Length: 263
Image (tube, rainbow, N blue to C red; front, side, top):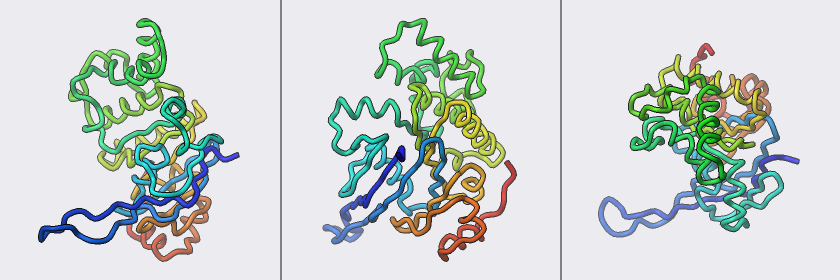
C-alpha cells in the first residue's frame, strides 16, 4: 500500500482585485487534477519552475491548505475526512521543512524551545526527557547540544535549516514534505543539507516529497521524479528515466536549463 495516495486533486483560487480597481474575473487553478502516489521509504522529487503549483501541492497533502476537490490518503487514512482529533494524530507522522530558514523559526524562542514545540503540543514528556530528546535531535542534524541555548538569529542559514529539520524530526514522522529546503542557501551549504537529508532518510526510514526547481538536486536525492507545469503533473517516472530519456518538452527544457552540481 502506498504511503501517500493523491487522486484528482484540485486547488482553485479566485482572482482578487484588478490593478485598475474592482474585481478581476476568473480563477487560477494552482493544482489541476493531480494524481500521484509515494511509496514508503522513497523520495519523490517534485520539480518545476516557480509558480507551477509545487508548494501548493505539498501543503494540500498535509492539509495546511484545503483543496477544492479530490482525495488524499495517508497510510490508508482519508486525510480530508479527518476531524480535528484525527488530523492532529495524523500530523505527528506528517511534517514539513520550509523553504526559508530565516522566516520559519520563531526569533523569540531559544533553539531548545523551537525544537521542543511539537513535543509540547503532541506528547506529555517530563522536562528532563524533553531536554534529552532535543539534544539528540540537535546531534542528529550535526549540531552541538549547546546550540539549544542560543536564538535563531545567531546562526547561519544552513544552521537554521538544520534546526528546522530537527524540529520536523521531533515526533518521529513517517513522511516529510521538504519544500525547496536549499533554494535560499548557497550551493555548497545546500549540498550539505541535501546530504544530511539523505543520511537521515537512511537512519530513520523516512519518506520524502522533495520539492525543488533544480533538476540536478532532485536527480541526486530522488527515487522517482514528478514534473509539474502550470498546475499539472506532465511526466512521472524513475529518476534515471526522467533525467536520461525525458518525454515531455518541459522536462527537457528543465534539464537543459540547469547545470550539473557536485554533491
